[in-house]
Image 1 (spheres, rainbow, N blue to C red):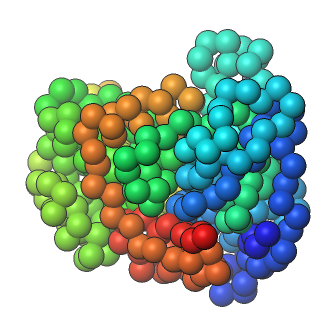
Image 2: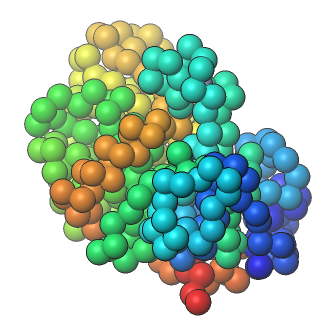
Length: 334
Ligand SMILES: [Zn+2]
Ligand SMILES: [Zn+2]
């Protein structure tokens, strides 16, 4: 099969990805073999390609927003029939026995494993995944509209929950890529007022089209104080900016897996009056099921930019250069 691997992590201009031929993987016990229909491109793939996240094994295939069909099963994998439409997401395994798993926080499991980091992901024609960690997906929606839900959607959903937005509250969204454009729609469907701060003009236009009350450049103050904010841009300089925009008692939730350094905070300006700063670490399967169920009840408008599998490196370069409005999606074709 054709696949891309991260060969030498570094800036996209240095060509960290390499297109290779690999054997179709064999599903191990409890795993299914999935034929990939589409794989959406996540900023985490870019962090892996560019070396912001340390590789966990050499030559790994990135990609963790996969929509495909089960075509084979390993020993004991009897939950999903052949042809079942499934989604393969970031969280690939958790131990189920540690103190975090036992209290429902499998996203914090020290033994957790991730698709496209610990195991080969979806920038390929096939991948294997544990049956317990794949999601059943509906048949009605096109694959390219489902794929971005699997990380951009799920992580954004968790970040929104962690932001503790009160009912009818005012939410600030910093950065407006794949995850933010979905999360904004979830918040709007829940009755929030959303203010978007982001650098690209095309992203600001999309934000207004989707129903944001305002859209301004990333470092601008929103037109009113915020009850909660989510930082999607991987830019630590925006942390004090977003904290200063919070009303008393507000919460800033940082959605990304990687953030550039946060400058010094000034207690009075950024934290006093019970403002809260929180991180978001991956997601649980319960988050995934909750987001997919929400998206089923409130179909989200998923803005995608299509690429062929052969163009994976170009898709990541476009993402790095802010040239993608919405979510980049690799189409595998047939
Ligand atoms: Zn665990
Ligand atoms: Zn992701």
